[in-house]
Length: 324
Ligand SMILES: NC(=O)c1ccc[n+]([C@@H]2O[C@H](COP(=O)([O-])OP(=O)(O)OC[C@H]3O[C@@H](n4cnc5c(N)ncnc54)[C@H](OP(=O)(O)O)[C@@H]3O)[C@@H](O)[C@H]2O)c1
Image 1 (cartoon, rainbow, N blue to C red):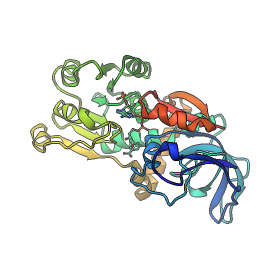
Image 2 (image 1 turned 90 degrees about the vertical axis):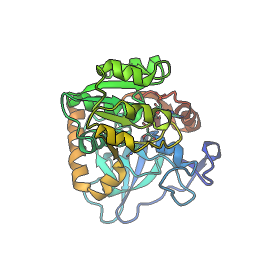
Image 3 (image 1 turned 180 degrees about the vertical axis):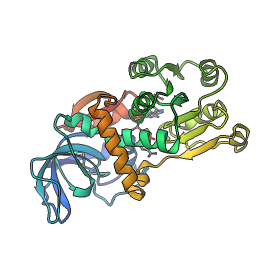
Image 4 (image 1 turned 45 degrees about the horizontal axis):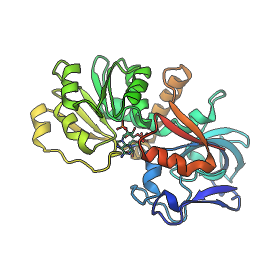
């Protein structure tokens, strides 16, 4: 097998494409031949030692992937050799094969393409948990989605529209705003050229959005929070923009508003039954055609460094997927 190895987490340049012995699964594990693996923002952070999870060295990055089970370890139930699965195990995806804990593998129904499956779990689960559980978003309300053309952003647009919510999608370029419109956004704000607060005011008749979905942080956070509606919910998803913003605490007081943290990974670990029910709903929505990953492009696995560069330069729209 081959894989991208991170022996020193000092950035993408230090990754090397190596031939490694194909491992045999231990108890509770399966060997997966990877067909597709998507890039999530944490994959960029983890190879720079900037992510909350710090795997022992060396490791193979690639949190989320889909492929075919090629060997099954002792005690594994419900998975067979030849079955296609999607898996989000945190590492291992950027290669030709990986070992994965069987309990993290989701068997794929017929007709679920590997590229979609590899681009599904992290973004849709995060956005569903954020908007519906943590944000209590209801039909008839308005949500403002920042970084709306990115991975979690495009999933958030689709989920909010599936809930009958008015979506204002905000992104940094006209091309990204066009993509958001095509995904169902009711209105867009190009914060590369427009003043965010003024645009929100105009689009909400001065009322502000009920929910703000923020995976970007940085300079956008404070103006977005200042624009939120009475009893608004500000969802803290991530900090793709770099600096972690700080908000003056008089702002939530004045709006009777909440700052709501979202950590899907821990939700899945701590509340596994609720997470399984949510994943079931998302799989149904996919089968009904209500949600579908937006694939920026697929790239061959050996072009991972170019893919990372594309993500780091904010060029990705939707999800970038590496394929074998
Ligand atoms: N809380 C959770 O449970 C959870 C789960 C998954 C992901 N996340 C977080 O959510 C965030 C987004 O993840 P993602 O996979 O959707 O990433 P992504 O596809 O790269 O989207 C991130 C968006 O952030 C914006 N951005 C602003 N400054 C940027 C910069 N310097 N570099 C890159 N992007 C920048 C870009 O939109 P514009 O160009 O339009 O500004 C980009 O589309 C990350 O911080 C990630 O860690 C959190």
